[in-house]
Length: 362
Image 1 (cartoon, helix red, strand yellow):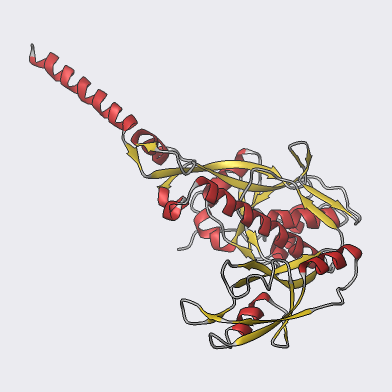
Image 2 (cartoon, one colour):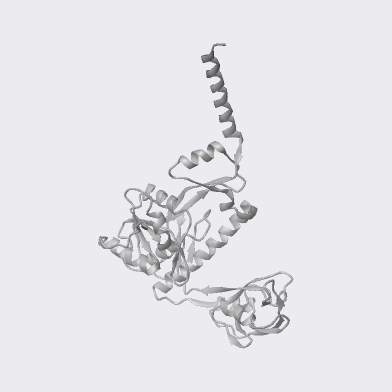
C-alpha cells in the first residue's frame, strides 16, 4: 500500500475512533442554558400569573419578566462531544455534575427542594410588596417541622402558633432557638401555643384565637451539645386580601424580586414600567432585601432574546453580569425593592442617565 494511502487510512480510522469516543465516553458534567422568561404582569398557560382579589387593582402595561435557567437532569449522562460543544457555545455553561446535584441528589429531591424554595419566595415577595405599599401584614411564629423521635413529637404539631417560651414572648422565629438553648440538655422548657386547628379556625373567622396550651417538653442534647426539643420554627403571614401566583414548572427562589414588583404594579395607580420591557432576577426577603442568584449570564441572554431593554440585577451579581452584557441590554443594579421601584420610576419617565448600572470590578 502506498505511504500516502496508508497515512490517509490511518488518519481516517483515528478520526472515526475519536468520534466514537466522543459519543460513547461519558463525563461527569452538566449544562446550564437560558430558560424561559415570563411576564409577571401577563398571562401564562392561559391564566394571569398574578391574581389578586379583595383589593382594588389597576391596569398595567409593559413587561416585568422573571427569568430562569435550564439545566440538564440529574440522570443525564453527558458525553465528551456534548461537553465540548457546551464549552464552545456562547450561551451555555458546562459545570461539574456535583455543582447542580451535590451528594448524589436525585432529580426528585432537587425538584422538591426547588419547589419549596419557590413557594417560600412567593410568600416573601407578597410580604415585601405589601410592606413596600404600607399595607398591613400579620406575622406570627409557628412550628414549621417536628422531627421524628424528638422530645416534641406528639406534643407540638406543624402549624401550632408559638406565643411564648418559658413565659417570654416570641416575636421572631430565632427567638425560639435562643430561648430553648439557654437550657441545659435534660431540663424542661415550657411552650405556650395556639393549637393549629384553633389557629386555622380563628383565621377563617377573622378573629384572634382565645385559647392557648402550655406544654412542658424535656430538652435533649444535640450533636453540637446544645439543648433542643426537635422542632424547626417558621413564620406564617396573614394577608389582608388574597394574592395567588400561578406559575407551574418553575422552581427556586430567584423570581422573588420580579413577583414583588409585579404585585406592587398591580396594586398602585399608574404604570410602573411606562410600557418598557424590563426583566430581572433576584431573591427577596420579607424586608425587601434583594439577594444574589446563580446563572446570571444565561438569564441576561434569555431576557435580551425576548426583547428586554433593562435588566434588574442583584448588586452582588453585578460584577459577573457586567463582564458579558448582551447588546442593547442595560444592567440596573438593585439591592432592595426600594432601589428597584426607584429605578423603574426613572425608566418610566425616561430619566435613565443616572440609573445605577452594573460595572466590571477593576
